[in-house]
Image: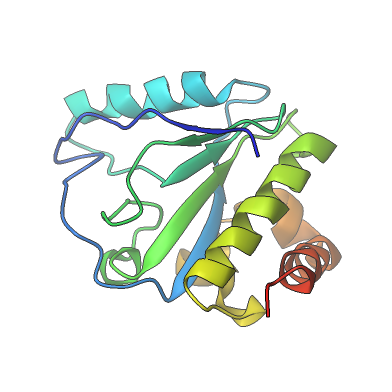
Length: 165
């Protein structure tokens, strides 16, 4: 797995440093900065630390090359949804679409499946614990999974199929 960490600077808007209570869910989101690299997306989120309107962060960003970048430690809260209590008990994964249609590359899907599999094993989760931002706060992201429920079901099956016993 192509994973590295480049954590955000602590700030009120992107990385409070507050500890995660537990992990009960995985939430999938997306950043609409089409075709961008994981580091570019990370730097965009870092830039939000200097404003006062938007709380936003994820534990992981996955770009179209399949690179996974950790930007918040798993034991800290990320602002991947607008529901604060949900954020206190979930790991957030951000996908970067290849294009304006919201398509994800084969590499990004493969990395996502691998990461989700690791997380469901690590935290003893079920497929019903894999959610989208839409499931939590009705934001229509990631669009590819919202508009095509078959894709979301397929992702869950792939991730859970390889779950260690």
